[in-house]
Image 1 (cartoon, rainbow, N blue to C red):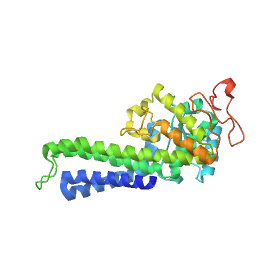
Image 2 (cartoon, rainbow, N blue to C red):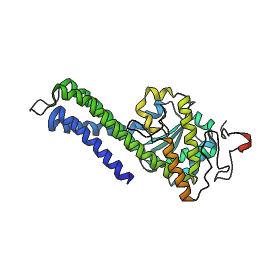
Image 3 (cartoon, rainbow, N blue to C red):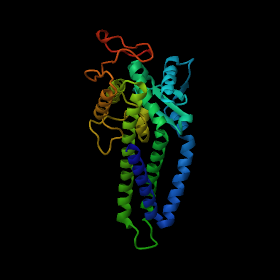
Image 4 (cartoon, helix red, strand yellow):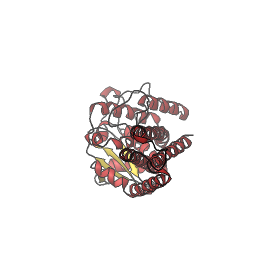
Length: 319
């Protein structure tokens, strides 16, 4: 059902894009708009990963520079049946992470230094498994395409404002219609893009929790990351809000409930879904999900990063 909803939303986005092109230039305008979108998507298909990693100043790490992190990614990639992705580190205080790449063979996982410092090993495993789930579902390519089409719709709508729509017949929108198109078309594209993003986040939470084997590890990480997103600004994300949907938690601001303008589902709803999955899998769920709690105490790789409840929250094995 998630794949069907995503396909329908993507089809709606494409139809909206061609509709704006038709209003501007008739049938030929719709075809030209489609060609432009195809060319733009082709460019982003090959270059989107390098563009976004460069945007956030991410640098690649390996087993010699970040052995714990790279080893954890390698273990989880093996569990997920994925090729080993490239691993990048962003010098950013806000704990967050995203995945990028056109396919699983050319994928990358990027995490912030804040994520490594504030999460336990178990919580970090949950976050990385979530990002690997995006890669396995090919969400990284899907989100690039939707962002590109949404951006093209906004560009075309503004272009149509200057030309007043298709004037070869009496069906053009005119000045008033052009103003409405300029406002409503980008808004509609944004709503569809966000709906696709929210659908894929739930799917990635589910698969990521199955990869790591403990849904509550991811639930605990989500609470910590969302709490920090309210307190620690991500200035690069603020300058590039179109990339906010890529992160595991919105780096711009948090939302208490799902709404039309949220790039992510509410954290409470995501945790509720993970708790239900934990019950289905027979996993041991913690009595509560709190930003200062770590659970369970041991990881499935034979070591624990938790210091135990009596010694306060763990900062993780990274520093």
